Length: 59
Image (cartoon, helix red, strand yellow):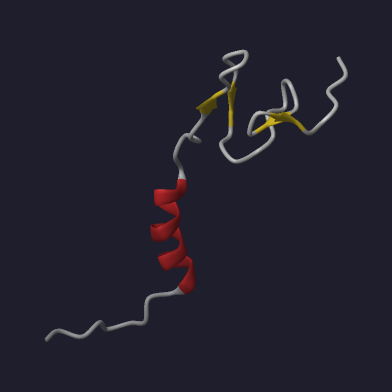
């Protein structure tokens, strides 16, 4: 088998692997008010998590 002439640098491999990370975040819809939020996190709009009020949201 062919062998590489030079060692692949850390910077080059990180650039190659890092290109796959740029994706739009997945969003979940809140069943109570229909807002979008990151899954498995507290909804910042109303402070709900898994159907319970866990954070006081003052407007």
